[in-house]
Image 1 (cartoon, rainbow, N blue to C red):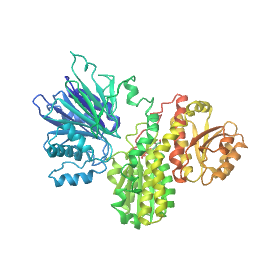
Image 2 (image 1 turned 180 degrees about the vertical axis):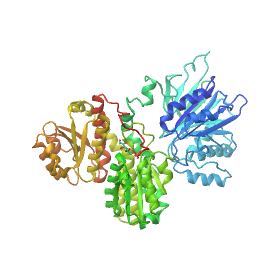
Image 3 (image 1 turned 60 degrees about the horizontal axis):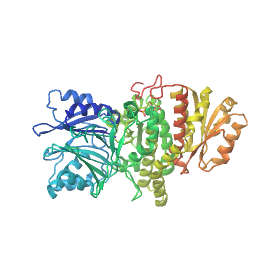
Image 4 (image 1 turned 60 degrees about the vertical axis):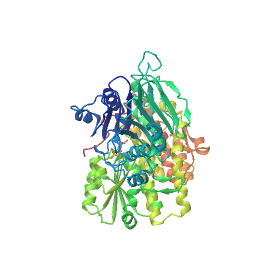
Length: 622
Ligand code: F6R
């Protein structure tokens, strides 16, 4: 994630940049920074760990004058959240300053090459590599800033949205993007002979909208040149001129912060294809059909020699852990136990130094999960963390780990973090399987291949289930719901039930489908909606029999089926469709309509979905 703001015009840049950063704080808030060129032509960089307010506090006595500037609020990817790793980053000569959102996948190679050419680095970030590379291009080819940025970006693999300043050119602002969003705001008076040219840059339109509604959405691999005379020039990396596609924004500020969605939860549900692309970026390779989880590879022996894995988590994270267990056991042939962290911490569990404890947590702050880690460590286990929030307590307390990189999750009900956790646990299983050689090469590559398709298949699922909103209204009468699934889909049933409970306040139970007849079937009558995850996979026939048992008792069947299936559809009252995929990846698709259904049922009942009663995003108490 990360948020970028830029300004060039007649006004003082600092207040515009700071206001813009506050609007972008939802994109990350572990550190922030600003850079301006003042009237004397000096380029300043001020950075601070923590939120934007901490930055404001720290620059109170500083010179923050200047009518051109860039700013950044960070969601750390490479390097811990501190002032040194915060953006903007200076080039070695301090002539350039740059802000960046994205991940430079080949930054290590580039850094080594630049070091050979005499560049020294202050931070651990991939971003500093970019600014040094641009300066290197300026020096080597004696080019202007624009051409240097263009040349530098042809060497970069990964995702970027950048804004760059050069103190020798205080009238010019350069921006570029690939796979990370970047918008240019064009001042209202730019084409007026008496007006003063103004340009704005933002990761989204929220820092821009109050100054102008004229915007250009930069496209992939486009570079923009802006100057005080009102010139806006856009080319691609190959220097082919592009015509700026000027658009008029129709949205208001509130709509914009939520990306046009009425709630953060819905925005985060729809963000999943991109969030998961970020999660797998640099870890799953389409070319080599490989998985690279450095947190595992750096501790290879630990994982190869481990007796078993114990996954500790709470709530939704516990559900993803259960899917992780099924996959890791199947792929890597190592026993996996899944524990509620709150139970584990107060037992006296048998743990040896040959055990690996995996802590799964979106926030990285859950008190019970943190306590479980401490217990595991005191007994000599190696502890691996899977967290979303960079630099969180759990990330710091673990021996090694993997970040989800799905971006900040603001809605209290976890959605994109769940699918991010599942994918990360699958990548963990694949990495261990490869090290232990428990999968054939063909099977391994096929699993990698299929996993790479999942973001597109989630997009398909979002695009092809638009009637959920309409039909969810029907179920506002229900006092109870039952969710059923088998194998990999049993944890999805648990997760679907939890989502509905927490935001609509309707009681819901998730069960393994075959357990119904051991008691819960007594609850079924014509009032009872029963959600069945019934993909055309493994235990399909058995799930169809379970559906018949419910139908015979007049229960209302809401099913999740594979595209093209007619059998289950024929006996269902309502049906959601997902594309075909391997058994182990079905949860990543099947959960999507269940997230949407709980959202729309809650909306129909008038609930506050982003902040449901009695809940908190980060449970830092027992
Ligand atoms: C449900 C939800 C909670 C969390 C749980 C653990 O939507 O969000 O059940 O999953 O509180 O939180 P983390 O993952 O932050 O440890």
